[in-house]
Length: 188
Ligand SMILES: Cc1cc2nc3c(=O)[nH]c(=O)nc-3n(C[C@H](O)[C@H](O)[C@H](O)COP(=O)(O)O)c2cc1C
Image (cartoon, rainbow, N blue to C red; front, side, top):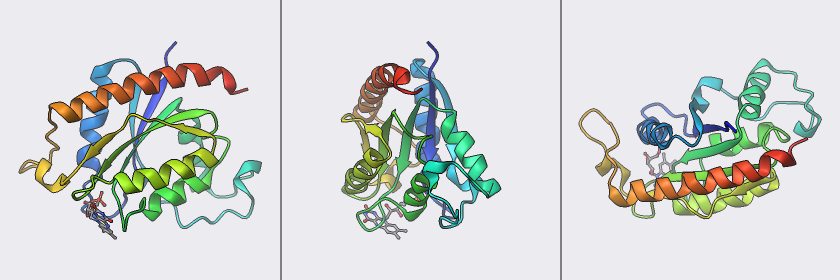
């Protein structure tokens, strides 16, 4: 069974670090070979603050940006959110993108790669886990956290991983694949 993984860059500001970390993770996931891996950049969708007139459960989307985002979310069997921490929380761009659709997220597993200062974005991950369960996603226990992310970039802003981070990434992908396989039949 081929299962699709979307690694999603959820910070959208200019000069963000998100793509550096996400490019590394996406390459790692592709080499891990369990999933058919794709990289998705939330910035490409330019989602405004939630502006649909109907509740997303109805899937009566009126805006093109929503239809495009819904199609992207629907195409995956599992997600990895690459997220920073803004004031101990997930960035508003991430929360906004989660709110935009509902059924497209349902019954799929979610992993987190978080980064930040000394806390490695863990507080943002913990907050985001609560939110994704409302969308009927299953958050993974296994996770990747990157403390002091600025020190992990080379002169070209490429992310330089290390052995413990690689190990946590492999463990999270193994678990994500188990859950993605188990949850696929739950979707009607
Ligand atoms: C509005 C804002 C709030 C932040 N709050 C935190 C924080 O609570 N904890 C933390 O570790 N880093 C915090 N940072 C620093 C970020 O970890 C760092 O800027 C990181 O590069 C943000 O990810 P991004 O570049 O992909 O947007 C904050 C940065 C911004 C812009």
